Image (cartoon, rainbow, N blue to C red; front, side, top):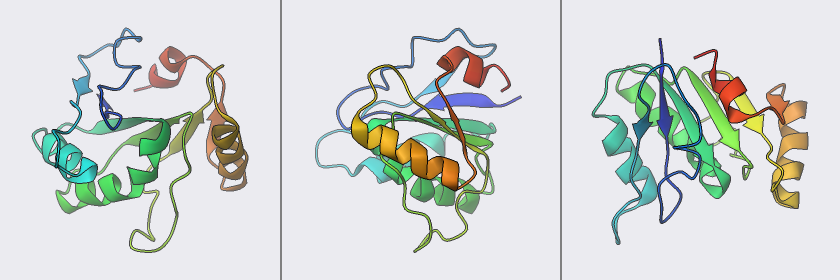
Length: 142
């Protein structure tokens, strides 16, 4: 069974962290302290667990999904899945050309921006799952 890891925004805990009742306790990553890069902080926090993880991103931080996927693979603990909520679209290719290494679900909430809606259209073209289902339903399979 995978553990859901809620990844922070730039300056706060993931806003969806307390909104879903899960089968297991989630792994909630705090926001980085000042002067610490987001990817470095989150990677270090995630390295504290050997559990298989479902990585849950909110908004703009979804662009870092490939870097965190690479970090997890380098620890030989790849992500089980990626959930991108109202995301900015991660770049596929480049330094992380083999990303995604696990299924990607894009979830659009009622407050999704036009940028997130455009990201959802591009996600469909990539064959990723795009849904408006509640986060509870998306995560119930993990």
